[in-house]
Amino acid sequence: MSSGPFDYYAKRPHGHDHGDAHGHDHDDHAPVEDREGPPSEFEIMSRAMQELLEAKGVVTAEEIRRRIELFEEDFPYRGGRVIAHAWTDPAFRQRLLADGRAACAEFGIELEAERLIAVENTPSVHNVIVCTLCSCYPRALLGMPPTWYKSRNYRSRVVFEPRAVLREFGTVLPEDVTLRVHDSNADMRYVVIPMRPQGTEGWSEERLAGLLTRDTLVGVTVPKAEGK
Amino acid sequence: MRRQTEPATRSSYAPAPGHRFNVGDRVRIRQAFPPGHRRTPYYIRGKRGVIERICGAFPNPEELAYGFDGEPAKVLYRVRFLQGHVWPGYRGPAHDVIEMEIYEHWLEPDGDKP
Image 1 (cartoon, helix red, strand yellow):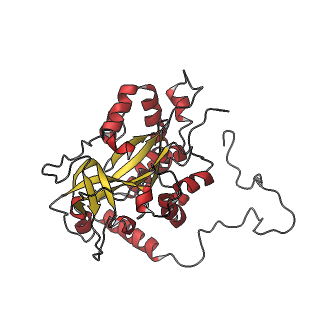
Image 2 (cartoon, helix red, strand yellow):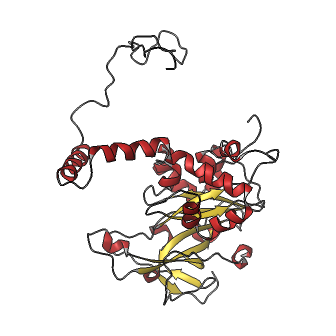
Image 3 (tube, each protein chain N blue to C red):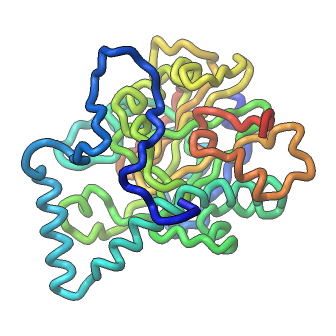
């Protein structure tokens, strides 16, 4: 809120329209509950592990909080910045293709344990990334993976009917374009360098980065300049 | 397969001295089903492909998964497969490919054309 203290009791816009067949609670004062019932085994394990690590002086609660904050506020935007830079600097693009981790470090982004392979879309090749075994994802560049990326549906189908899956994302590939599916199944992480759309000549890196959404960097869609 | 003739990029991560295979070599993924934590997907076991790049040497994930140190490190490759070979009913152009990372001990030389 930009002006005045936040008003807890202000009516928020409802966001959708429907008749009287209410499928959910309309009470703005209803308590927000994560979930019914006791904490799951994983929540208990996670909490116990954090408390032990804090007790032993390995990490502090503040470090963990800060890490979560980075994951939400910084990591999701790094990929777009790196690829926008690659679009505007051909030498950087080559270094990114040769060694993704080193190029990111040069750009001021430390990927920590991640080894990155950048794969580029061209007029004759389109790349898409999946991890069929779990949910390996370039988290230090794109943040946490979206739910669909982790779903069994995406993970099992994008390897054997990738063109059908891409169509569901609104991406129709011509038959003469080779589709390269990358199963991120072991130690490497992947990011797609999409083709820079026409009509973006002279754009700043910041503006270009705005086109490079998470989905374009996973390869399920392509960036579009219209309306941006 | 036309794209396999393109020069492949060699990763600079953890150079892998003594690697058994080179970029462009034809390989076959071992058709084996050992128990435990394996990073070789079932769907690719027994399939034939071509080495796309050498990723480097990494601690063996099959050992790391059980609390061991993963030594000796294993050489990791990226292998490229034709989709029409991996999935007999593949509905897409013959030039579509799938690529993934395979550790050296899952690879066998394959002299035959895939």
